[in-house]
Length: 168
Image (tube, rainbow, N blue to C red; front, side, top):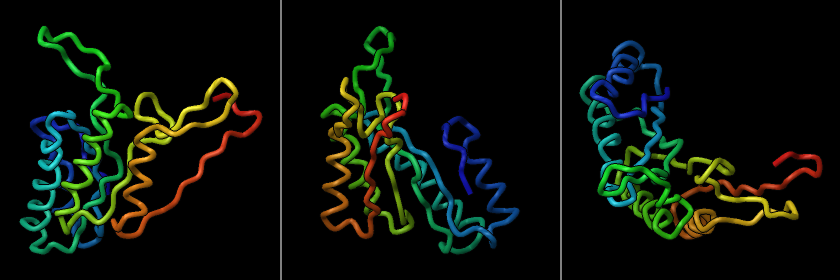
């Protein structure tokens, strides 16, 4: 089951309705969490509320949470409220925020899996093609490799290639 991920005043109503109506048939609730790189802890709200709702509504902690998308927010506002893409997730600031997010999620036994937002999508990409159509990795790809190789449990290795007739 995929939870509503845009946090508005009513964001949790969807997963609560699903838990009430079919909780005994649900094994995992998937969520997407995007966070300000200066307030990564705000992403924990989704996990805390979802986990507590699972326990309150089903009477059990059997249902687990999977973070199927996460990344630092691309858009940042200056003091005048003007937005710009200052903190692209693959910059060092974005990578540090993503590392902090992974570290924070590791303390939750109810979060059993996570992956990053995208391989090739705007500023969230983990790789880009250069002018010769050769892929190069962003810093976020390096971070994911570090976590995959250093004791975060099971991980899935991902290799990406550009086909010769591809338009990217």
